[in-house]
Image (tube, rainbow, N blue to C red; front, side, top):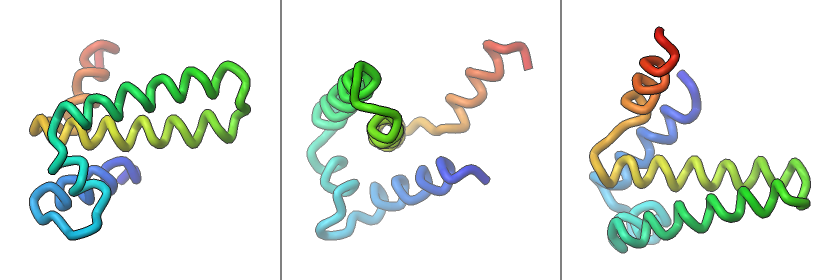
Length: 93
């Protein structure tokens, strides 16, 4: 199992069982608009990293973008499996 699926499970658990002080639970408590804002911020940070901040920064910012995207999917009741199925459909698998 890819770590992204493990992370998805952790995120879904934080949504179902919020823990005090959890960043993820805090995002869910803040609501969808705040999560969408974070996804947008992280997308911009990936772009800025590509434009001159080096590979380590690109990797770090992409990790942040993937994490916040998984939070957004969970907020909407969607899963990584659904995204994977769509990618497979697009590539004729």
